[in-house]
Length: 108
Image 1 (tube, rainbow, N blue to C red):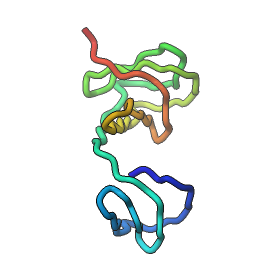
Image 2 (image 1 turned 180 degrees about the vertical axis):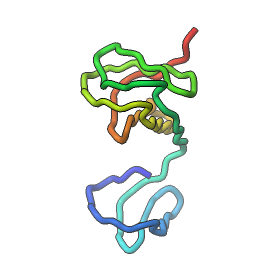
Image 3 (image 1 turned 120 degrees about the horizontal axis):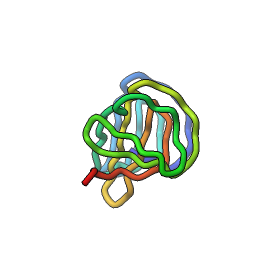
Image 4 (image 1 turned 60 degrees about the vertical axis):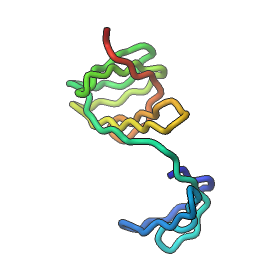
């Protein structure tokens, strides 16, 4: 789901009510949101992760490579990687809960 407004609230395992692709309610809160076609893939960095530097490449456990496009320091050993693949958009990559800008590709 993509939120189309900023609204902070917390509820554990809320019920989501949608009409078509438009999200109307999450839990007890009215929201303005949209449901997209897509998938979330979970994997891990194969070894140490010491942040991103432009063009630095990391191998992921699913045999995909991630090439960094920005600089951000963060250290973790085998951090979790979540790849959000939304139809019609470039994948969004989160490593250890932080979003990183980069490119995914398969080695030759």
